[in-house]
Image 1: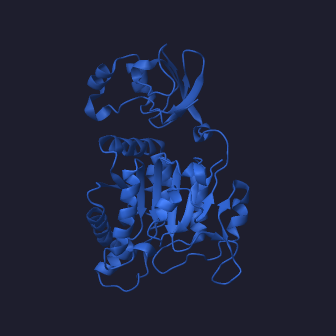
Image 2: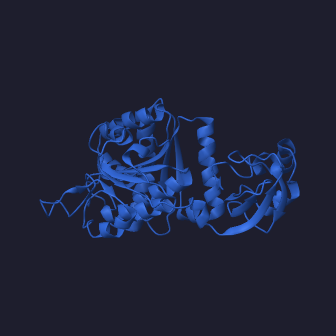
Length: 360
């Protein structure tokens, strides 16, 4: 079970910063969070950021005091604000490198696209482990407007793609309260919410965190918690105002609300199996599985599908495949150089199963 002590050992983290925390004509809030994010990166952790504020930045750039109504208007403002937002982060967090990932709902729900995004993020940190990845929805062409649901849900989905072991959502409220503190002065903060208490938490999120800049209140944060729980990822919701809030969370301090995911099997066990592969003697559990390790392929499956893996000693696992069944059938048992020559640099994508993408 996740605890404050266990999340202090998290190595792969997604941080979501709400738009109200960044809404400013100056760089001050970006510098504040850049200092914190840089410290997290320098500690050896891998970090991805979901930064709200594209619409807000666009509104400011075009001289609006408040966000105008209308989906098309919001999309237009996002197209103006997105480069401003990225430029601010790039300037403020230097010399840490910044990479932008634009995601859509399709990228998350389609298994092939999910695998492509997952491997691209992994490759990014293999090229430069100190790079800060900033994930945003492609607001300008989002068919259903700006809601992914919203950036809380986008952060939870990115955490799944990133393989995160912690999601931190920074907002304007201190966490989940027993009641709305704006209406009930006796309301007190709840520091830990267990899986069985999550439904009860819905009734405590009455309008908390509403503001004129963002699109989500505390209800959307609880939706994001449920999305993160699909991959057994713990979530901390906390007030982003303190200058050292990320460090305090990662030191195990009891700030904000920790949502503890349910115990159980690895999330890969929730996927339907689309095929099977058998491995040669010598293929090691816990290591990447290459095409040359595969001796037999059964079934038809696509890149990103869940496949049953049979090790030579009889142990069985399952994982997300980096190649479709036709490729594995044609090239099984062949050395890496031969696979690269057969597929070319655009078709080759490393191991058949990355060690982060399968479980026993």
